[in-house]
Image (cartoon, rainbow, N blue to C red):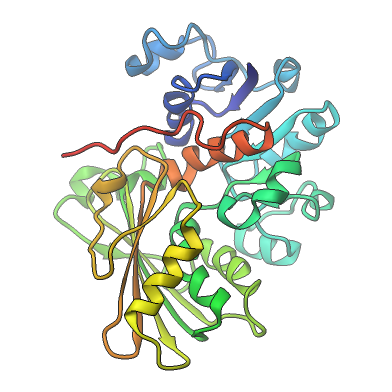
Length: 343
């Protein structure tokens, strides 16, 4: 059994980790922390976990994790970097679900996150945890930066086209929509159902923190930096992301060729499902599971990719467990073979 700990077990990604790990056949959760709920039984706060965990939340002291082989940080940005050096020195592997280690350029990170990085010397060795790109590096890593939810949906949609060199990297558009759980489990008037219900809006149009992360990933496949317009939207549902991606082709290419390209690129990926051409994937197709569904359209010379994920699973906790499986030499799909919830 792999013994794991979770720092920040009361947020949406923390409880999603617990829900998924409860079904994992080769993992034992040793420690779950929460400053606000220390001493409270996990099942008391989250009754859906009754019968699965006989654990109480504890204070997030570093020594609480000495029996763990791997620790997940499901914490706000800026938290993990305070403890990661100590845990790495203790021989514990780390998966950070926040943004502390996602960007390689420290100046860019500090610009977008508005704080000084506590351990920039670790950025070089950190592996970006998108398994469909970095599986071999993840397997050898001791520190993995779990991708953001929007970056997962957007990168998986654009990557086959950029890898093949058939679209203009200077003319990329990502029009993405997320449910309100993407904002986290905190008291915030803007995400109350009375504020978001029966409404639809764009936000952070002038600059979202996920923009440099997306560009960093896509730039690996272009000679010049990509020119990406990324506009996120908030929609009145709890979980799910739909990203509609637009790209201009550099040569004449048929929809059949593009469809074949996507099928070939992802044919061995257990958590990417390429639908028949001109399908319209829905967020409910992937609700509660670690899957990205993609569909391709081609109106005129524009390629349109539709990408859907559950922001809390493939966009967070599920992908983190996928990375854990790879890091620990377990079958990649362990604990992640559930079926999406319909209706």
